[in-house]
Image (cartoon, rainbow, N blue to C red; front, side, top):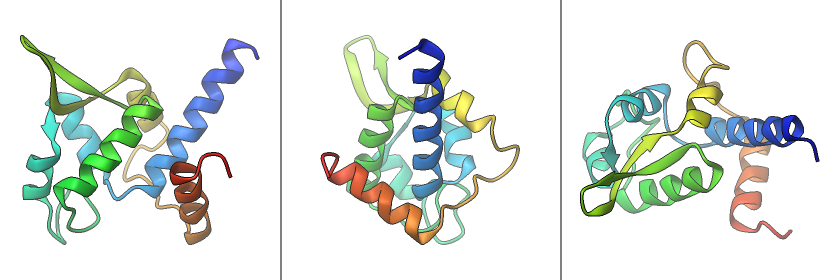
Amino acid sequence: MPQADTESLSLARAALSLRCLPFRRGFYEAVESQALSSEELAQKTDPASPLTFGPLSSDRAEDHFLWLIRLGVLRREVDGQGLTERVRLTPLGRQVLRRWPSEIPRAGRRQRIVEALRRHRPRL
């Protein structure tokens, strides 16, 4: 498969995932400028949070982080002792965010179900 096709598929897959996850654009903008851990995120979430669409536990946030790392949207921050629990936005993540000048549009129910199946049962 040519390089351009692989890149466009990666971008499309990442874009759909961003639309299905509970993170607002503010979250991605925050991790573009500074690293954030799932624990820190959980402490900052409430129904009016600019980072998420609702409250989120640190375990659930970590699950989403791991998925975004697999997609190439986030990466673990590195300090002097190795990888940390904090994440940062990758160049692919910045590229995906350029698709939407404002808030990331939410996916419909059907798209979220298909995405959840693809994420948790990849061989189906």
